[in-house]
Length: 174
Image (cartoon, rainbow, N blue to C red; front, side, top):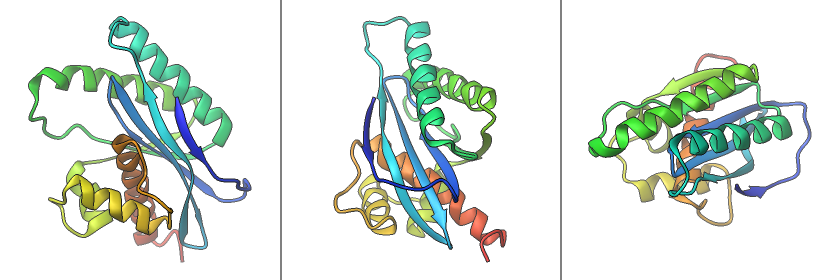
């Protein structure tokens, strides 16, 4: 598990954003305070190709459980599997998403799902934005010094920001 950290207190809403994948699962913990967002931590959970499917899913579960224990997010945002160009990866990614959903439910973290189109629209204003645009907007919105790496972590940040934007629009942040 790789991560980048910032110091924080525990008084504000924390969202765990997740970009599901079997080889690499991106994650980000974003805090909202006075309608401003900041990244507390982000990174990726990486599994080895030589491990069995069940071992890889367990690794995702175990690492995600550690992240939840450390940061205590109340809500989570996970990307929905809407359409897959690569049919070879749709089932493994679906399995990873299932393991993630189970972990979040076990840990009592409320789950919200967003399509890739919703995430891109929320973060860039354009539903067909390219990956580079998502990365640049994640950096800009959270006032990071560099583009978040790996790409999966930037995607997880975007999913979390999408959820936070949704909360703002629902007048939960007035």
